[in-house]
Amino acid sequence: MQLHLTTVDWMVCLAALAFNVALGLYLGLLARKKRDSSGFFLAGRTLTWSIVGASLFSTNIGSEHMVGLSGDSYRYGLCAGTVELITVVALGITAAALLPYYIQNKVFTIPEFLELRYRSEARMCFSGIMVFICIVTKMAFTLYAGALVMQAVTGWGIMQSVVLMGVTTAIITIIGGFGVVAYTDAIHSPIMIVGSAIILFTGLHKVGGWHALQQAVRHSPVPAALHLHRPWTDPVYPFWGVVLTVLYAGLFY
Image (cartoon, rainbow, N blue to C red; front, top):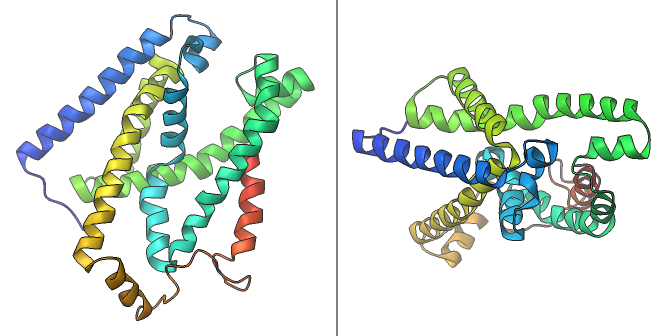
């Protein structure tokens, strides 16, 4: 499906994108006063907790969630959301058990911590493995899902959209460091929350309300779509299998 945008729609979208990027670059460069690794990765340690929290949220919730996880929820039900709910536990364990060591040793990357704890070879090995994993999993899924949206909106090819998004993101990040990422994420977070809420309530209104949705689900191919808990025999989202897997993967992530 391809959406057809008018000239005014295009102008509004481009203006919003330009404003977002420009504001993020300005705030990021303003925060990044030191031209060293601390300034690049931590924006000179000037970010407030609200900006960091919004960045954590927006970085974790990407196009693979908006497109992929929503698609899984449509096919299998709300049990697909169990994956994200359990990450709250992993984040709590990380904040309580791991972050104090990073703060105490004043490190801001995991490879740096591994070098301090072990040796430089551990840092290089872990960095190489994570670059490979991020490229073939996280980045590949995110760029592809985003490209699907771009294709629906603009009609561009998948690879054209992937290259455009990848190059643009790389340039902005190289120039501004984590500061520009954090501030643009802080702008994205309320947009995603408000936009998702609008879609949710619009959908409920169109279907006739929550009770009508429950009735429709009972007669759908997935009658248990509104249940988070699935038995251990479920081939896609067994509840306890998801819990244990996400705890392990979430702590590593």
